[in-house]
Image 1: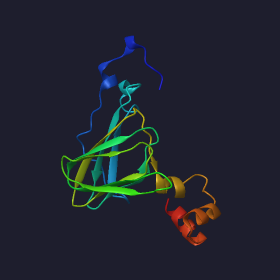
Image 2: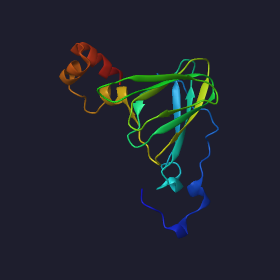
Image 3: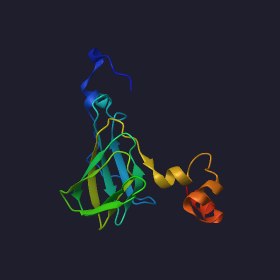
Image 4: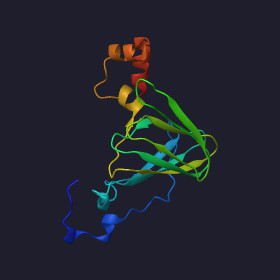
Length: 172
């Protein structure tokens, strides 16, 4: 982002309204992320911080994803979440924890991670070490790329039949 002339800065450059409002979780994964980063608050530019609210439907998930430019610390405000991340290649070890209200968990920068609501409702807040952490949702990126990743690449990568790769791509 281009820095704004300091003489033109106003209070609205440092303000966001709506973080108190629950997100619509009526979707295939049962969650809604409300980001508050440099795109929503221009005053975050160069500060190296941002946050997000995550609302979960019953048993909803925030699907496996990664933030290429930030570490994340997640705090549960309401409900119980099963969370985890996968360490990097070659180990690929899954690190998980059950979090309850008031608990926090850290997801290191660039590692694939997820959250799952274990009950009726859950709300969490995530803080990031970047004003623009980015997000890559793994299934969307792999099966929903435009144009499609070649089915022979996906067959070998996932070691499945081409019909399965076509079926997955059709969902995204």
